[in-house]
Length: 357
Image (cartoon, rainbow, N blue to C red; front, top):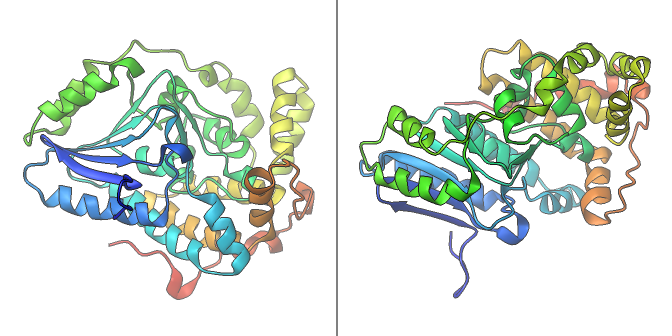
């Protein structure tokens, strides 16, 4: 990726010792990923996998605010308004990359420090060695944009303990580091002040690094086990979110009436009703799926339908463009979301179906 003279590129890929470094390098945008960056990561993986001098791959984000705030949603919104096919292209290449990361032969380490959202989850949480810190705030807030948790998010969320994944996926509630480990999005917590030393240790492993050596190196910097806040309230979450219909989830929360139930209802009330119903169905289907690829293919069908919908354009407008936080969803109520409305999100898309090697 070429940058103008005097400017660093949005993606830096280089070898340091035995480590193939992939650095997301848009700190002012909290490293939000673009199509060019997705393609650059894919090319970098080609090189690192073929290079016998590279023993492991490390994903990191530039700046102090986080690994990645997700995709470049403003550009996608502009494309949707113009009727172009950027979403179709970007999500295809991004989802194929997510699947590739999950199957890399060489150890893949992700430093999930600070904000990790949406597309950033897809680049990190499918890796083999996922490191969080006390600053980690991981979330999949897409339903608030008229979208759904994608980049393999339905696979990850559906495998979280009990109904915690359903809760995180529908509410967009952020996870701290302990929550991320509990939910299966991360493996180990390392204090942020030790990341530089851990990075140096990983570089020092050299070309002979294997998964066991990488795991041991990370463990040498790990902090003690922290209690997950979400684990403490899991029994209540399981009771509320065990249903297959959004109407029943909302009714269970109303019956409970506690402060936590009321705050959860408030969070749901701010989301796209259509997005909530689509997300719940995607999560239930993912729970019965055998592979990440199966979930990604299903997400791609739904993503193309979302890209053509009014809710996506309206959700991004309210949250990112005008920032009035007052989206006008269509339909405006969960009970108005009919099977006919959501059917296109799950329909076969013929020649456009996502196919994996």
